[in-house]
Length: 364
Ligand SMILES: *Cc1c(COP(=O)(O)O)cnc(C)c1O
Image (cartoon, rainbow, N blue to C red; front, side):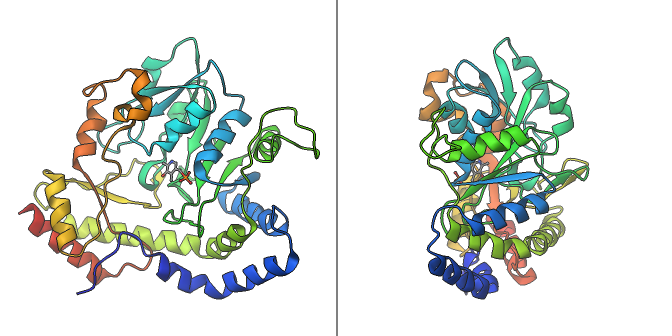
């Protein structure tokens, strides 16, 4: 029997292959290989899709976060609050911007940033928070907004997600996203973008991605070389036309898993925060003896994943922050129990039934 992949990028490609081929031909024919009309067209359509005024395309999601922080005025000497249960890039961007990540735990039900703990960690140097819209649902932005800090969202997993009808960058000064191939909207290589309604932040981000320059050979600050590639912009424009439907297919698949797995002893299903419309980047259950269950699923040809096995405070990269096991018990317990089941647009009910059966058997 064929295996069931965690994501299926080839199936996605088949739906956009003609548009991508035509777009690549257009770029090759134009001789315009840095920024230009394809990048501008994608930025305009992604801004429209996100209901945000400005989109600035950059080279990847990590850069998008760092540029968003810097464009929002965050840097040396600032403390920025970051949840420990995220991909390492969230904290890397803060550190690379010259600021100090101050880590907080997550809430046990949704594994989103724990706002009560954010409140307790605010000190004289605290300038910003980077909430992460983990697994495809938004963090409680209105509660975070009431804290009076700069908010820069990590929306890498939340393209198209909304909370009370509003998406990333509605409340925060900026949101950063990633078009890593496996994301809901994925490129054919690295790509990213930031979203903002603030004209000045957008302008500064455009300069930062381009060597810190608005006029050729004039560099008032130390910028990056981090531009969205026009060939990736072609791919992203082609895929964006399908994203709403793909997200709806993910939603249907999530509901199907909810029904298939309801009442399986030992399996904790993902919970959605009231007010959220999630886009199900990942469908994450919690199980006992996770590594054993994962090995059994893999032996049955089911490509499950773990997001993430090690919380940020226990990574060597942030050793200097001085944390120890036990500092963030909710995230540490979750890290030992989370299991991402295959979910992607086009996953079939029969495939999901196989996953559910294999999970039931693996748990025993
Ligand atoms: C993918 C991801 C990133 C980083 O994006 P890259 O494009 O790989 O740099 C950052 N944060 C989260 C939560 C992600 O899932």
